Length: 323
Length: 253
Image (cartoon, rainbow over all chains, first blue to last red; front, side, top):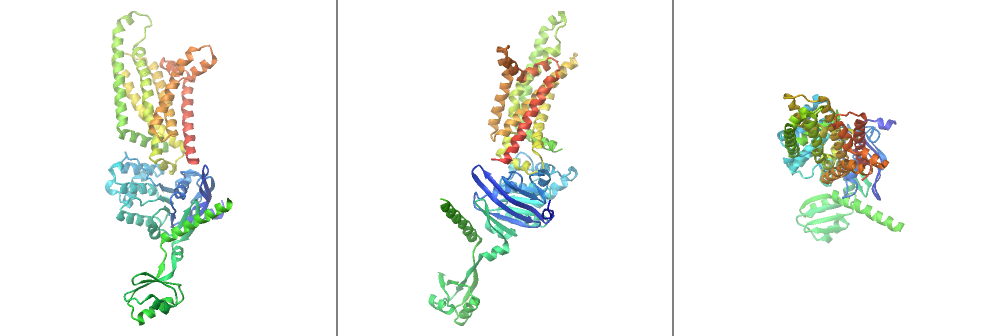
C-alpha cells in the first residue's frame, strides 16, 4: 500500500475503472477521488453511466478493469471491510414492503454489523435524523413514496458509514421534504463523504462542493462549484432601463455591440475593463432610469447542454474520421 | 451471526404473508386426514395382527406412511416457499441492500436456506405431533420414527437447496417454482425409470440418483450413512451453485 492510500482524507478513490456490458462500453477509464467532508454531484444525461458508476462504487457490480478504494480498502480484495464503510441508496429504495419501519431498520442495523446492544439506539437516531419517528410502527408498503425514500436514506446512513452514495435521493419528494433532505445531506457531509447522482441541476448548486459531468461513459468535467461558476461567467452585461433610448444611442455611448432582448432590456456584449462604468455613467447622465445592471451568467443547464453536445460532436467527428 | 440475521428476516417475512399460514393449514389438514384414515385402517386390522407372529406395529402402519405421504405433499409445497427467496428480491431490486452490506454471498445464500428450513422444521414438528400423540395410549418404535424423521428432514433440505438455486437463476418467482417443482419431480421419478432395465449399469446409476430411493430405506428404519451423505452432498452442491450464480450477478449482466 502506498502513502497516498493511507491518507485518510481521501475516502473514495476510483482508479481507471472501466466497465463493459458485452459490446457496450458503459464506463471508459474513469478516475476520481472524494475527500472527507465533500459532497460530490454526479451529473449526466440518461444512459451516460451514472448508475453503473454508483453500482460499482457500492460493490453491486464488479468493474471490468480498474479498482475502487473505500477509505483506503480495496473493494474487490476485501469486500466485507470496504462495504462496512459505505452506505448505498439505489435509485429504487431497497425496502421490504411487508415489514414495519422499525423492523426493517433494525434488520439493516444488524446487517451492517452494529452490535445488538446498540441497534436500538442506532435505529432511534436515524429515525430522528430522517424524520421517521412518527411512522416507526407502520408497514413500509403503506407509506407514501416520500416516506419510503426517507426509509431508503435511513438505511444507507444507519451505521454512519464513511462514504454515503445516494442515487437520485430527492426523486418523488415534495419541495419541503427536498429541502429537509438537502439539509440532511449537508449535515452528513460534515464527517462523511457523499456522492450524489441527480438530474436536478439546481440541486447540485445548492448541495454539492464539487461537480462531475459524465457522458458516454467518460468524465468530461470535474470541477468545484466555484470553478463552475467561473465557467458560467458570461461575456455580456444585462441592462434594464425604464426609459430606454434607441439601440444606436446605447451602442454609440458604450462603443460595443448591443442587442435588443425585450422592450427596455438590452444585452451589451464584449466585457471590457470599464464597460460597467461606461454604461452606468451614460445611464445616469442621460436619465434612462437604470433598473438593473448585471453580468450575464450562463445557467448550469446551458453549460451542461454545451458540454454534453460538444462531446457528442467530437465523438461523431472521431467516428467519421475512423470511417 | 449474519446467517441468522438474514434467516430471521426471511422467517419474519414469511409469517407476515398469508402464504405461510395457508400452507401450514393446508398441509396440516391433508395430513391429519391421512393420519386419521390410517388409524381407522389400523383399528380394523388390529385383531388379525394380534394373532400374527412378528406383526408390524403402529409405528410401521401409521407413523411411517404418514411421513411418506408428508414427503410427497412437501414436494409440492417447498417450491412455493423457495420461489420468492432470491427472484423476488432481484425483481424488486432489494438485492442491492444485501450486496452493499458487509455480508458475503455465502452468508446470503445460507441465510435464505436457513430461513426456509426454519419454517419447514416448524411444519415438520407440527406433523410429528400427530404420531407422537399416540404415545398417550401405546408404545412407539422411537428408533424407527427417528430414522424416518431424519430422512424427511434431509429430503426437505434437498428440496429447499434446489429451490434456492432455481430462485437464484431467474427474476420471476413463478418460473422458479415451476422449474424447481419439475426438477424435483424428475429426480423423484428416476427410481421408477431405473427399474425397467435393471440389468443395465446406467439404470442402476440413474436409480441411485433418485431422491426417493435414499428416503425409502431411512423410512424403513435403516440408517445407512451413504444415504445421509447423498443428501448432504445434494444440499451442498445446490447451495454452492447458488453462491456462484449470485457472484455472477455482480460480474456480468
